[in-house]
Image 1 (cartoon, rainbow, N blue to C red):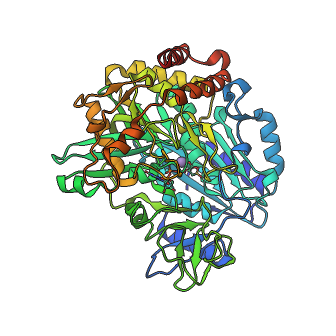
Image 2 (image 1 turned 30 degrees about the vertical axis):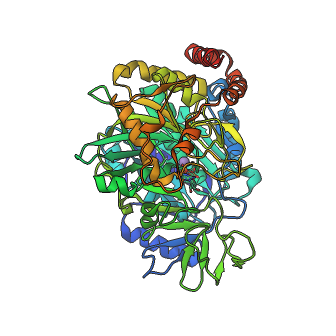
Length: 587
Ligand code: GTP
Ligand code: SPV
Ligand code: MN
């Protein structure tokens, strides 16, 4: 398959250590994948779903103790502890390798070792980075075939180069006490043991495309971000691109695929999806910021996805998709999850594979159940999806889940202030990671669990990028779709109607609309957000969610100060200055 000496050597070493019964070099061919799917069905790892209703689709259940990312067991194993920073778990590389070696010794006995060549970004693109993942999981192989450009062509692109990311995954016994997701930035290596859950084992995704890539981006002068990328097409055919960072399960997939409200559709507006989770952004030859989505598919949250909230996502899952931890409708061998429709199946198994009574109040699907769907399935996939050069970004949007405090939208005064706005982001935790749900925590740039080095150095890198971009820098905004009323209901309708806010954002980028200056930045004049044809939503309600509550923001300051305190000497002067300005403006 390859003559690349560094790959052959590494594979030989791992083979000797892991002792598989068989070795299979994955080439990305449909014939090989089909044989693996059949094998997965035979072992029970996969359940083939109704071929007529869901062609090429499979159901997979992960272990009950293994249903989300495990932030507490995710480590950055940089040489120096200081380089991992206060927001990451750190282990000395020597210690980590010894521990992982012990856990993985002979771990493939009786199993097959699959060797997966894959590219993040279109093969051959200046953005592309290559990886090889070794795994003993068929689920991983067939998921990587959807989520990445998995192909033997990667070996051709690499030639004899040593510039590829090493990834090792061992299911072992799915023992949570021995579960480790370790990153070795200095060795471009990722090792994941004792898990079979997506974010922990599809190593091209968070481990490579964010934690390792953020290190590469810092060294090479670009950004690896937890961002969706979408294009808004105007009635005259012009398309403007936006990149947006929201924490896990806070709306990236939904925004990336939004369907414009009818009023906008009639005018001729369209939205195109370039990516729903990760953006790699570089300064292009024209000095602007250009972005690609390094992934090839969507690993999206299933619950809540329906024909009203996100029809494009739902349609994306109707063929060649893997569903993980959703409910199984035994009557017609299809799948179901909460809020998919109003008719939960009567004869079904829940995500655990137990007989499920939909009337007993228990959940059919796990709150973090997901679909793994090819991007090409998406009805609104951008024509630039495979573009080697990427798309030019006009606006960067940060956002979180905040019941109060953050207004619907505001704009930063300039790039440096925008970096400050990103750095102080806070959001309620979700089921995407194990642990408590609904607790507000700081999640700067939605990268808290994904930045592979010291967060303060990461902010410095952002500030540096701004200097290089100068007046060509995208404008930076913050949004919050999740303000609630006194009864805890979301005030803003969200989903497709978020286009109303994006329109204001893009108008601001072009200097076509005024705004009100407040202590935290520019807030829209309420009459500039289009709420025409919005049922049950009036001007006064809009005003209420655009309001900046001085007292709430003053108490926010305490949280920001505490958070910033963690970074000590490394905190960039510029951010201290920005915090000073905010404090002063709040009075
Ligand atoms: P990851 O894949 O975990 O990175 O998440 P994501 O950011 O892509 O999240 P996703 O779009 O899947 O959203 C997850 C949850 O947010 C679902 O429960 C959605 O229903 C909800 N959601 C998304 N957009 C909106 C919105 O505009 N308003 C409200 N109220 N909820 C939303
Ligand atoms: C997230 O948690 O942000 C995800 C899902 O996108 S995972 O791949 O599990 O990280
Ligand atoms: Mn994500």
